[in-house]
Image (cartoon, rainbow, N blue to C red; front, top):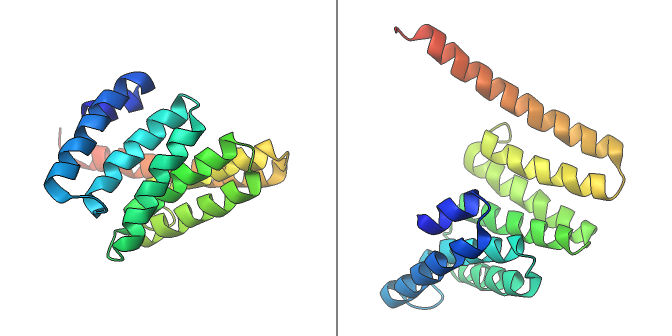
Amino acid sequence: MEATKFLVHGDFELSIPGAVQALRYSLDVYGAGKIELVPCYLLLAEANLGLGRHKQAEEYLSLANWSILKNPDCSNRTKSQLYRNFGKLYASQGKHDEALRQLANDVYFSSLQVGPEHIETAGGYYYIATVFYLQRRIDCALAMCDKVVDIWLKHVSGLLSLKSASPE
């Protein structure tokens, strides 16, 4: 939890010790190659990606991918997170076509898990928009941004409707 908190706040260096400790405990409890290790690998990959350590991020993503491949009953949410991180890695390396492929997989698995119009899926659309922007495909980037805004507008409108319908 601490590693995730630091990661969310952009304190990538501070998130690594907690994620490493969680990985050690998970390895002790579950053993190598188990699906339960994937969240730790993803935390470490994201922290290293935030620090610009592409090689380390790719190593952790590869370990997560291996665990997912060995466990076909893995959730679509976990697959989505893996592909999103691969997409972010490839985008940061300038491998835009590969980033788009990975991010399309992210959106696909997120859509299977929660639906294509869910705010969790909107993150994948956002990263696709970012890659399109980096490719100077502005019309495509704007279309993806419109999708993100539409999803969030519906979500926030739904929350406001709930608030106004509930007794104070």
